[in-house]
Image (cartoon, rainbow over all chains, first blue to last red; front, side, top):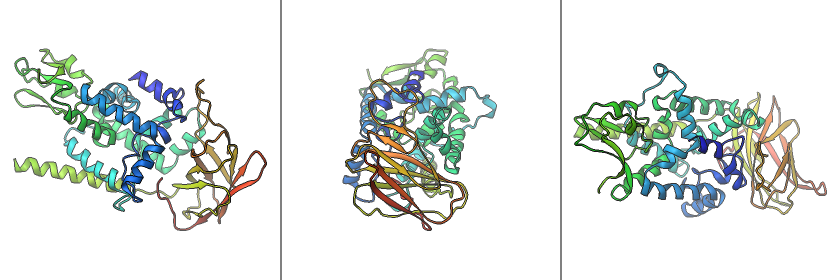
Length: 259
Length: 152
């Protein structure tokens, strides 16, 4: 996670600079290219891939890796989700908001419909508004770059900060934005579900599980439910393996589900 | 069973509602606009809101002309960009930036700019100049009134 932050965010921006950018916007933006364009779906997609060539290639790579190994990008590399999670660890638990009452996959796909089709349907575009791929890199670069401070002190920047603050830093587990609003998370969770029969995922050994619920308490994406035994929702799980380390019976592991 | 479907449907609707709220969110002091930099073509005017306080226009300017060294300026505004990088990597041989002056701008490159105006009144003009000979590449009129903040 720290490596992801160092590689993608200011002051180094090692990877964005390889694409001629300095942050996660422009050619590196991984979110714009699949938005349906009112000018034409196919031509809009081609234009979007051309403009955000690095971001679209990155998303393609993420989805392929996820298919075989689970959502490793989200859990181990993503600098944005990673920064949210790390910062949230410094905030006392009693101050955090628990979003786990929300059915995350249902909410996420509802939001995603508007994200992808909002401009096309004339509702309006979400795009960069409230985008954590904008706000967090800008926060990281704000001590060095006046333009970032300019954005963050506008009403739009403040609204973005509040959104990321509530759904990131102040959320239990620090991953509510990832789980509810991130469009890449939506695609990635579908890829995670698609590769379930042949890819590696977090899994529960029902013979060992005693249903104590320790895993459920610490899951940052609230993807574990426990009735008699623990169940992992593969539409939300990212293999951070925190549950594996906390399970007193070593009932949770990472590997192929059907062996 | 039915309660489960109903709960799922309610959360899908909550997601859609949140999306619609976000999509419709607008503020007075910040707006997006995009222009195409091309020589000799009359540019479409930009419309910005009537807000009289500090206003930031996030301008995405796509370079579709040959000059690689260009200056973008507008009277009464400060122009900022998030280029250059804080620590320039040795493999990054691209654009150099100083204020509104960009050197080595590739054809097709989008320049992200912030135009910051404090208590500006009336209309204005963005001038795009070829730094190699000082000639004017394009002039874009900035009008007040209905915004055209269609997002890029």
